[in-house]
Structures are given as C-alpha cells and as structure tokens.
Length: 327
Ligand code: LMR
Image (cartoon, rainbow, N blue to C red; front, side, top):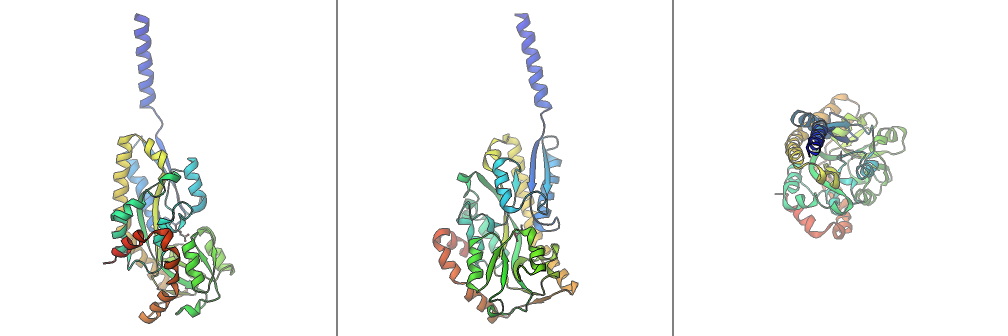
C-alpha cells in the first residue's frame, strides 16, 4: 500500500515536471515578401507579441522573402505540419475555394476602406471558414494595397498593353483579366518576378506599391500606371487541425494578438504604399503615370468580361456583399 502511494507520488511528480518543462509550441511562419511591407511588418509584430505574452509557451520563427517556400508549396507545407502559419495573397487560393476569387475581380472595390468593410462584415468572416474541408482555417485578412500596372513600354490605354507578356499571380481570374486585355499572361512565383522582368521573359506586371519598391521592380519596369484596378490583400492561414488542438488559453491569447496585429497592419498599409510610391518616383528610374477618368473607364470596360465569367463559381451573394461595401 505504502509502496503504491509512493509510486503514485513519484509518477505525479514526473508528469508535473514533464508538463512544466514541456517544449514550447513552435509556430513557423513562412512568407514571400520583404520585411518592410505590410505583411513583413505584421509577421514580425506577431512574433514579438507572442514571445512577450506567451513566453516559454510559444515560439515563433518567421521566414520572409521566400526563404523557405513559395506560395504554392507553403500550402502543402501547412497540411504536412512543416509550417504552421502563412499569409499568401488572396489570389492564391483558387485551388482550395472559388469564393475567395471575389478579391481578384477587377474594379470591384473602390478603395482599401471598402475592402476592409467587406472583410470585417458577415460575408468576409464567413469566407475565413471557406477552406475548412480542405484542412485550412483563415485567421484574419491583412492589407497590402491596390495594384498598379507596369510595363517596359509606355502605358496609358488598353491598346498599349495588347500583345505583351505579363507576369501574373497563380489565379484564373487574373489570367482571364489579362487575356481580356489581349495580353499573354504568365503565372510565376513572386521570387521569380524581378529576373523575369529583367531578362525579358515577361514585359509587364501588376503589383501594389510596397512590393514594387521593396523588390526593386521599378529598376526593371519603365512605366507605372496608377490604375488601382484591383486589390492585393492576404489571408492569414493555418492548419485547421493544428489550431483546434492548441490548448484553449493559448489559442485565445493568439487570437487576441492576431486581432491586434491585424488592426496595426491595416492601419499602416496605406501609408507604407504611399511611401513606396514616393520612393519609386524619387528613384528617377521609372515614370509614374496617372490615368485620366476616361482612360480608367477604358481599362474598366476591357476588364468587364471577367465578372460574367466568374460570377457563378464565386457566387452572386458573395459579389453582392462585396459591392455593398462600396458606400
Ligand atoms: C505576388 O505573388 O505578386 C504576391 O502575392 C506577393 C505577396 O505576397 O505580396
């Protein structure tokens, strides 16, 4: 009897000490952009807050600049448990859900504020769950900014881009958008864009300002046309099973931190875009052109067929909710 009590006590002690000394949970966060961009800032801020508030319980390793994976591979790595968090652009989820394609529809959102109203609205929140069956959970949306067209040749109206080869993200909506413009679209990973533009594999692209400046695209593109024709934002995404299995108190704290970081990223994204735009202009390497209202109308018109083609698979209800965010 005495022996059993002692053994039990020793066992309890062992279990407690294992629990006390349990290794912290590791979150590897892989992304493809520079640390100075909204996503880069957000990932680093997430690491800092987690390590302050969950010291000893969670550690975060951030891998920027495609050091670890490109956006295609990172989705597989999430399912395999090789990374726990990523934030690919919303253009990159077409393989897993058709609904998020709404973010790629050209000239849908008036500005970033409209995008944000949609993301925080009922439909935006619902879409965070749209890949649950595939094993992914959306944790938050982060802004980068509105996209601008760029080319080695002067751009003003759609006729100027016809016949060129443009780099696009991994998105069927964007492929259709460029095809509607008479462009030959090439899906390339972000890490390959600079070289592709430099060596002439492609002639043109579309990017938000912070990506353009941080990756020096203004050194290999002569003209930028400020069309603001679409948005490039992110989905902070994790493995749904991993998230569910986290101890409840840790998960709650992580969710609080993510909400805080999201507010901060979104608050800073517009200013970061404007700073990058100014840096591009100041570099004197390329010209930033502002289209007139009539020119914008031409771009809008040429991209119009994209909506009809994707309306059904995205869902009329999703598009309607997005449009309603424009007031
Ligand atoms: C791109 O591929 O152009 C973007 O998705 C990169 C990024 O993460 O902003």
